[in-house]
Image 1 (cartoon, helix red, strand yellow):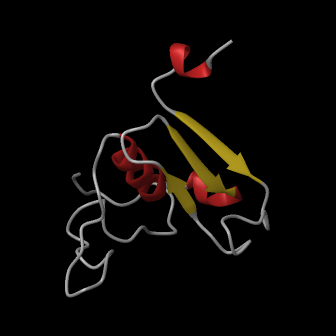
Image 2 (cartoon, one colour; image 1 turned 180 degrees about the vertical axis):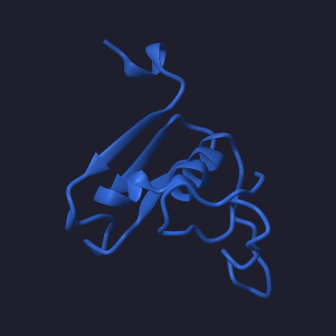
Length: 93
């Protein structure tokens, strides 16, 4: 049974405090691989529309929209920094 054969995108939601990455960071928000179908979210961050859209953007091949040497600096589009607000923002990819 291969999930990627049945679904376009798969989101994994981990419990709050789950360690992630080589440094076992527990304060991460979300992660997605560029041009693949999986995203990972740290607990409640999966409920924020901007984080969901941002990570699916990575799955679709988009990179961060940087500005002034800040990889999340251009907030005119969804590939900048996310917002910890539900049903927000109203932005374009």
